[in-house]
Image 1 (spheres, rainbow, N blue to C red):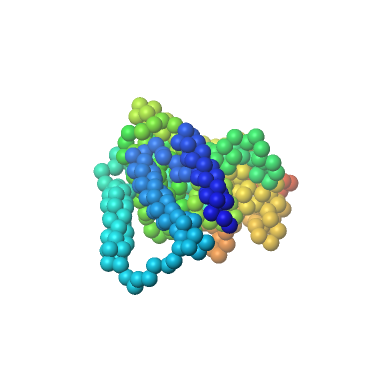
Image 2: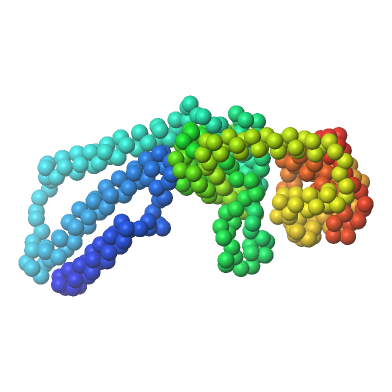
Length: 376
């Protein structure tokens, strides 16, 4: 390649780079990190950009020197290689300069890492537990807990064409609700396999490990809805356990807490009443579609060789105690989880009633919430 052609090519590349750089200044580039809505996320972003530009500067110097040498020190121009064995000046420079660069990066990086790990003096403490395939949130200061499941994305959209589905695979039935301008500590664990709780806008990604508790924190400064996902391959429906966090003003958060406590009281009252078949079937279908359909399918036929069907199965049409036992306690060595800790007495009664009377099972059995306590 001639020197003229090389210069022309390099000029074109530099021109293109300048255009891209100028556009990225005017608008967020999708390949870059999100700046986030918390102080720690912005600190992480600033550190990322510092290291990026240092790397760019090093690249410009190194490749600039290489290109200059290639273009101006060719044999065609009569250049002759210098003959020397060492240069004290060069050796001092390439020792001192990298040390200065490393120190320049290490100081802010250490500061950010220390801030990232400082979960002390939290205003709100929330335990986050990963399940296959959902999240459980427990407000340790308020005695509130609930599960958060994928919602608003139909199996037809998942298995077919998702075009036009807003927030595809990023909606849940029960979002995590938190107050703004408060330090929130997340204690993150898992019930079964490895998961990872990740909300990019918070600068938070923490592994959820069975038997261990990792923690993270965030101070959210702007009300809004923030979305994330499980970031650890955790099984068949790994892609179907999104995270949705709704940040509210302090007044709205206090009102939400009051509503949740009222709902807990209402659920306790519902567990003591006698339900009719129609209401049990309606609630049971909702519980089944949320918790069971991912494995056993909406039609109850399961997946051959993987997940057993419930339609016409000996379990769902046989003795009721065995059916209750496997739902409450699960089955060791299989993917069948113990739902006793996940569902209320009312939900278990409803889903068992539904399974024993849907898809032609027609046992006529009707389970009441009061019947579940004995199975536990």
